[in-house]
Image 1 (tube, rainbow, N blue to C red):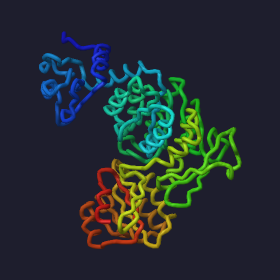
Image 2: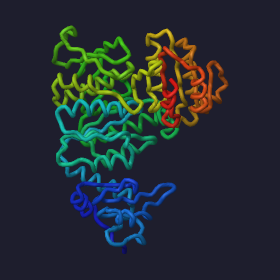
Image 3: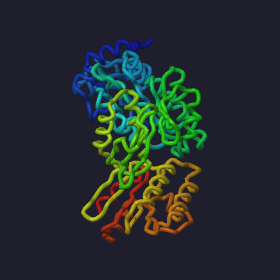
Image 4: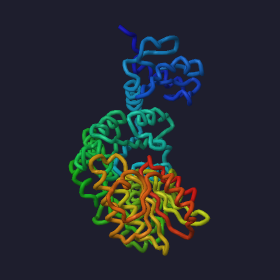
Amino acid sequence: MPQYISTEELHKIYLESGQQICTDTRKLLKGGIFFALKGVNFNANEFAAKAIEQGCALAVVDEEKYVTENIVLVPDVLKSLQQLANYHRRQLTIPVLGITGSNGKTTNKELINAVLSKKYNTLATEGNLNNHIGVPLTLLKITAKHLFAIIEMGANHQGEIKELCEIAEPDFGLITNIGKAHLEGFGGIEGVKKGKGEMFVYIRSKQGKVFINGDDEVLNDLARENDKITYGCKKLFDVIGKDITNTETVSFKYTTRYGEKDWKNIPAIHTQIIGNYNFINCLTAASVGNYFKVDDELIKEALENYVPNMNRSQLVKTSKNTLLLDAYNANPNSMKAAIENFSTYTSENKLLLLGDMFELGEYSANEHQKIIQLLKEKNFNDVILVGEEFFKLNDNSYRKFKTTNECKEYLQQLAISNAAILIKGSRGMKMESLQEVL
């Protein structure tokens, strides 16, 4: 029988190592623990000895032949990492908020973190480390000095959010929305609803609370049996918002169920985040802050000082043009929201650069055609569509390119100036690279 190290023993070594965990031999941490994960094209068990040579205190493998001094054996390295993260989570007494949804997970996480960090020492998911590896790694970064954790959870098939919740055990949950993302993996919109809804099912089982956009009927339905904190515009919710945006960036006001009701007396919050679809994300952050007793002045300060990055909802002024850069990712819902928002943008000279939306499977051609239809309805003339999915549609209403590079070469020749330009597409399209010639 192989001698496996227990999770409890591993946790003790992890604490002694200063809570240093690494899974990449290019980023080894002196004195840390190296988890030898396997991928489709690699087996990190082979690098365990190298990790020890380069200063790691311990390496964790799941193949007995690699076990030597300071290299320990577990049945499955990934499972061991997840079990360690869950064991660590169970030692914590701080609130843990889980965030999922089809659009805006990372934006919500960043805004909520900006607000809560005004009062608490927070730990939030870095970038989009929101999967079965990223969530455990995030949990294992929580130290005794942290007072709040915000864990982003992504999924592209049913059962994934349930699994991530069982690792992170959130006390509070938030689903940003239910939309047409990862339709291929979820098996259609009903599959998305069921998959994302696993967050609320888990929180209910734990008798925790969920934050919910009360104006969203789908979310209301999913959270029918949950203990909830509500926000929105249409009713007397726990937090009530009013969108007063009149420039490129979101401006809004909010009050509470028992607070001031005369909007003239409520201070406006002027953010640096573009797109009226981000109003609800800002209101979400204000609601979470309000529930956790962050002062209104600090909520306002946090939201006004937050600067978007990573090609998400950014307003970029180049020497020649104004770019509305929202190219981190795209699905039919977020693409529609961006186009509708841009249709209200005041400019004589507007151009849309739109890239393919990925992971739509059998729904892809239809969803891309719907985007073209929306562009026509909004009377947009200057549009360039980029990617194989747009290219193969039998609709030549707008100029099309198969690749982002071909589009970039074309734009370079045009030398566009004095234009407002929306750039959006799925991550793999790298639409943000078009900035270089604009």
